[in-house]
Image (cartoon, rainbow, N blue to C red; front, side):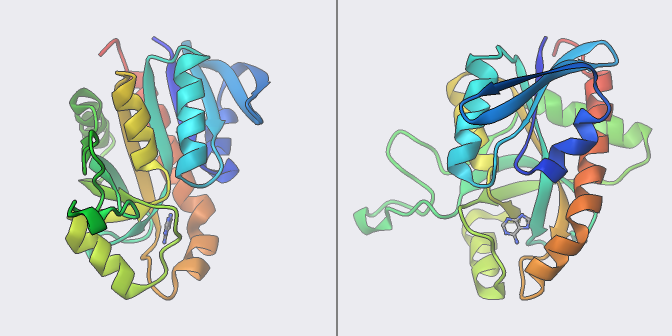
Length: 231
Ligand code: ADE
């Protein structure tokens, strides 16, 4: 078992890298990959940079070059659901691309031929997360996450994404990771802690809560690594 842990921004992976032992750095594909161990388990950690294209590149490299067998994503998201507040943890059941649009050809939003609108995450990893949350008495919400190359700071756009994709949160990388892991048959898991509500205050709240929410997510991911056996 070799576990990939991925974020999009340095703030999302720094709390993880700082806890690793025997770290070595490899520069590849214009990015840095941190190999090390966490309580004896082999991990490879990287941040992709923001957005679907960079996320696709990094997820592919983690699997194809570093031979990772599981991929865990840690980071922050904007809330769509009113039940999600800043700092809350949400795990993705399924992920969609909210900015994928060939509706001009009669297809639904988020769909291209031979793809699927919503890609489901690994059930075993979701169940493991629920077990960890229970053991630590943490509240973990589960829902669909919508991904797009857009920082959403607009109530109308956010509500459209919510109703079109039955999404509870939104971010900019998850569905890209889902496409890669599904195609390459690697079990994957997407965890986010809420940094903002994708509304007019989103950019201010994002800047204010990025570090604290990223750490909440990172700490939870490390607890999962502790409990991850060969599932
Ligand atoms: N990640 C965190 N907040 C976000 C937002 N409002 N839009 C897109 N991605 C985000």
